Length: 509
Image (cartoon, rainbow, N blue to C red; front, side, top):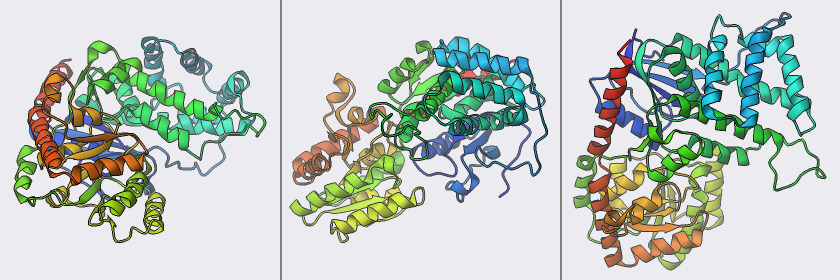
């Protein structure tokens, strides 16, 4: 596919594993932001894992996306020939070694960021620390060996060597991207991680503002992934393992992503969270408090409010989980809850409206669970659906997730008059019960339940669907809450001020 190309742009959006190739709340938000500012020229830098992990684009690029490029961090291409002997620059590797010493000692982010600023240019094309030296030089071999002897608590040097390679090789890809990116006035990363590291590189080398917006806390989400990842080796034998301790390699990856976050926080200003709990988490993870503030998600009332008139008089006994069929959404808990719901309310149905292609194996497990529970006539997999078509037909939106930020689907449901049942993750309690006295005074707009508790989820849904007065009160509370606090006009106004400030600073040399 041919991407739009330009010589310059106003804002570069740094996007890891999201828009335009992956559907979901973050991607929808990115699309919203681009469309909200047609006068700005956006460049998109998409960062993915491997090219084959992504299909066609899920979103059409808005007209004001004037430039786009896509990069894949783990599409390794062999050299096709035996590497030549290389010594490697001792002074450049020594600087890298000092940076890693700072990471191990858990130094203050400002000090590590200063050392990182020194080494960035050495990583760029033409620098003193090229990727080939990292991969093949005597100095790299010496340092990796020394690090293994000093720090590694697992027995296998081979696994340590390849873990270090896999962990660090993307850094040179990011350095090339930073070196070659077209001129822009400001950078906007929608996560820390690799996109945030790219933002830090660009901020340090080009002296242009870096905006960071975090929907979820990337480091926290990566920890969840790493805790359950089966590809991370644990070389301890059965006598060496303490089930309460993480393997050394798992700890390495966690610490790596923690420091990516800290480097990004130290380079970014402003640092934007969706809600207060996440802002406080950012500060605890190294962000400077004075740079942080909240901008909640917002949705279009004009788009969803008319759907209220299309609803039947009584709430349909339909529970709908709208989202990707992936483990973090814990679709299996929703399916198990539907067994109890169906037992007590035979007319009820459970709909799962979202793509299944991101994790086909998990989607198949969910379908098998439906069959094993005898719910084939009660639980329906609808695939991707237009949300406007769903809202008038359902009685509740359901979030059974183990991690969320500030879910757009809850707000969209509220605007259409649909209450929600959610696990106690992210800002969901705030959205359902209210943030402060004024917000709580609007009433409760659903129910909050514990993670992985299908009985509590089922009982909360039955309590609302079985009580029209309670359902109506929850619907009214949701409408009032979204209209007062969570409109796209409020969100766009906040980001207009952020962009105006960044562009004013970025346009001045």
